[in-house]
Image (cartoon, rainbow, N blue to C red; front, side, top):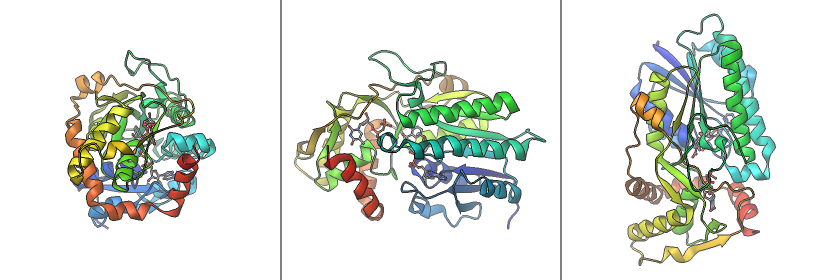
Length: 354
Ligand code: NAD
Ligand code: TYD
């Protein structure tokens, strides 16, 4: 095997955001070996990485982050200097159905990785870093006013956000107790190609394509701050290389949308791209029972990363949404491959009984 200058372990690299991060690092840093450790749960899909899977600086390992022996063996075999940790259970609705899976992967999995990093790196922390990819949901829910800053106290409201908050606390605790060098970023809602069609935007697109009802929770008045996934991957690259160890950076799109307005927008762009009469897809919108404990509003103040590291979201929303819908149109095979029996079963449990 070629000798590399550096080795980075990326967890969850076969998922939505992880695959964009792996692609960016593998192509931008050919002298760095990128190891992608992923369990390939329902959300992990190696088809996301087909275009780079043959690169010599890319290595895929199928495995569970809670498997300490496996993680240790990777550190024994490769001189890992950094971990970019994205592997997680990531969907709020699933966390309401089955919280334990979230505790297992998001909390125990994170602590397992932290333990291995502490032990493997303890003789020399120089040049090492554990980078935790977290969410704005750890801050709880906003009212009509205000923004989440890095100083906003944690106040998670769903089993998903509670598990991510817990993991973030452990990362800081390892920094404080063992001096483990770390970084944390808390990002707002991502959208873009390769997102599993359980989240609002790809689910809406998939249902438009299949003339299926578009389920909008409650009155559709909840607000999210949307960021194009490639802009998030660029921020991760920047923070990993230029961020101050022990610091937290919020990442957001400065792009708040009420769910119902976003769904209207998706319907109208899709009608245009599909050559359907304007207004056709809006007829699919169906208001369904609200999510339990549904957070009203998330909005990120990302002035720290903008001012200190010079990051800015670059993709205008209309452009990103159009590109995303077009991607799903062009990749129906990708969609079909993941619309397995298991996903359909979840879909039935989540929506058809509401
Ligand atoms: P995803 O669900 O698309 O992908 C998660 C990946 O983790 C999958 O490839 C899955 O196979 C893998 N995985 C799950 N459990 C594992 C385990 N035990 N061991 C190894 N691999 C495992 O998630 P995503 O939307 O790409 O999110 C990635 C990260 O970014 C998560 O940590 C999430 O909390 C965070 N985040 C997501 C968003 C968003 O809008 N999607 C926003 C902010 C932060
Ligand atoms: P989602 O994409 O699940 O992300 P998160 O809950 O992490 O923000 O949901 C985004 C918003 O869309 C959230 O307010 C819940 C709402 N939503 C619907 O109205 N219908 C749906 O079918 C889904 C999946 C979400």
